[in-house]
Image (spheres, rainbow, N blue to C red):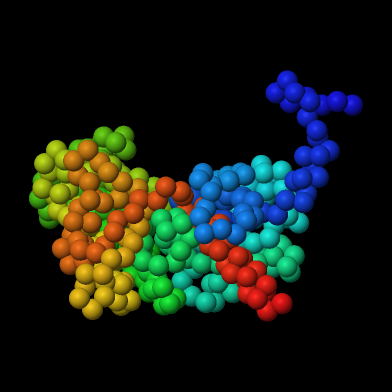
Length: 353
């Protein structure tokens, strides 16, 4: 029986055979807001990567940070998003050669080991498994899989993470809002909400943040803001108010401008801490190194460009910092990390034989 697709004869049996023999890599970027999984084919080893990269499928799910939603829910999200990506690509678990799972909340070797244990229950023993913090995938998305330099993530949360070419690593911030992710989307919005309450009860200066935030949320008074905040104090829900803070700052509100200026200083401080600990800038502090910048907070706005302000702040001390805005998403960075490690192992096995 002939099958047709797009008006042409479709060799279904041949395509199934190719799909079953095709080996793939899964790259996952799991954050506080969402989780993305991409499926890529195994690429031939080469010094240059194909452009564009061959992405077979992409799947999206909710939060996979176990500190936010609990371990059971995080695991279910990760399993589902991997299954969706494989299904969309026409592949299955038996086609998977390597998985790099880069998720927020991986802060200690015990976190890595716990995730590796349940990943091993899902995939056959020959599958290479890698578990990293999501910041590592973000760095790799800017350096196309090379772990060298520093990444600054500023989205719902924030973290700075760096690597030297010999494998040393360091991080700053990224401890969550309770321990002070200052400069993050949550941090900026939380300070704005605090400023509204302080202005309302007389402890702080008047600010247009009060009327603008209340209007945005459909509330009639600052007293209602307390109930709105604690009805669902999820980090992403609070962080969604950042554009309101930026618009007030662009309109000249002093309180909003102060909040953003403090955020810039905190984000720059995180980068400086990592650069200093790893010596990325060299002894004369002028060596060049890639600085990958990722996250909604760092994206350009009309006049108040937080990312540019952070970069200007850092460049004063480290003129060799080379800002990079990734052309691929962190999930692709995770897949490239897995591909690089897989190629290294294959080369080592070839040399041994």
